[in-house]
Each structure stands twice: as C-alpha cells, then as structure tokens.
Length: 265
Image 1 (cartoon, rainbow, N blue to C red):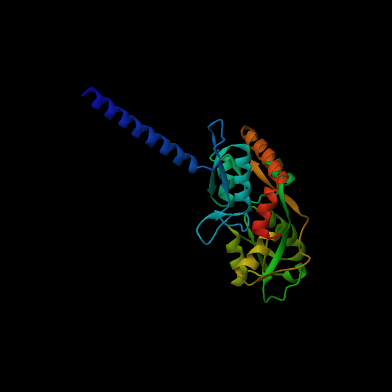
Image 2: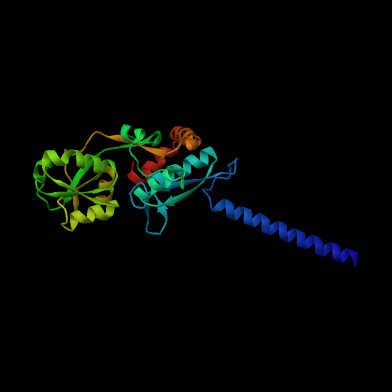
C-alpha cells in the first residue's frame, strides 16, 4: 500500500513539474526570443503602426520591418526582454512621456530641437532625408509650383517641420494627418497637391504598392540619422544597451543582413 501511495505521489510531482516547465517556456516565447535576460525586467518599447519598410504588417499579418528586426537583434545580443507595442507616432511619444513606455523606435530623426525638448537618443542606426512627392500624373516639378496649393504631412514629424519651413516662402498651406498611408491617399485622391515624408519610406511605398505617386527630384533636405529614443534619464540603461548591441550587430554583419532584407543589396 505504501509503495502504491509513494508511486502516486511521485507521478503527481512529475506532472506538476512538467506543467511548470511548460509555463516557463511559454512565457519566454511571449517575449523577444532572448532568454539571456538577467535582471528580469521587461522593457516596453513603442513604435509606429505603418512606416514601411521600418515598421508595418506583412501579408501574413506579422508586424515586421527594419526597426522591428534591429530591435530584436539588439535585444538578443544584449540579453534584455521587451514588449513591442504598435501605437502610432503621436501615441508612442505620448506613451513615453507619460511613463507608459520605456523607449521608442519609429524612424525618429535625431535633431537638436528634439534633444532640447527632452528626447534622449541612441547612436544613429540609419540616415534618411525628407522630400516631396506628387501624383504620378502631376505637372508639379518643384516648390515653385505649389503657390496657392496645400500639401500633406504626418503630424509631429521631420517632414512636417520641413514643409512648415518652406510654406511661407513658396505660398502653400500644410494639412496634417496621423499616418503616412493617409498622407499618400490625400495626394492620390486630389485633396492636396503634394506630400512631404521621409524619402526611403515614400520610395519603398511607391515600389512595393504601385501607388500613383512619384518623387520630385531636387526636393530633399539635408539627411539626418534615425535613433532609438527614451524620454527620461531613468531609461539611460536602455540607451546604453541599444548602443552596445547596435555596435555588435554592425560588426558581426547582422545589421547589413537586415537592411538587405528590406532594401535589397
């Protein structure tokens, strides 16, 4: 009888252990695939919803892009855990400023103005400029053709700042939208004469989707680097980890693999 009781107890104990191990693996898989995290902290990272090829949803419903892959590679290299939240540009900034997110990666250009207003940036991980696009059948060839017209921009971005700086000189008005796809549709639909956005984003959209837009040559500004950002010195550790991981993935070739995946060789 005692032997039977002992056997039952051992079987039950093994079952509990198996469930516990299974739960542990499931929790690990829900993170960023990195199991080297040593402090148990999970960082909350905010990002945009649609900013192809840096963050977007693919045909299979997966959230992908250059920013998404760089963050994953850096986290794996540095052994930290994170949760990526696709919130949108404005909402990502607000979440970080309110302490609801620890950092942000969303093709954010590193500028002195942003630094002065409280953004704390990592080292740059990609260089981009902003330029103008018009409808594919438009006769607009430059800023001089915009007098009396309206142009579309995404609220709170470098492209918005660029357009605002040109508006008075060239006599056009600026109309604001929440995301890049809506900006582009405003041009295609004839609501506005042109739009301003990051050049690689517009180029990728035109190439991949066949949308009826074309870039206007000679309208680009001076390029700036994108950076990972936090908004409080309490998250400086995250910046340090990002910088260290970025240096490592550049050195080992992973960074180049990510760019080639989305931009070609």
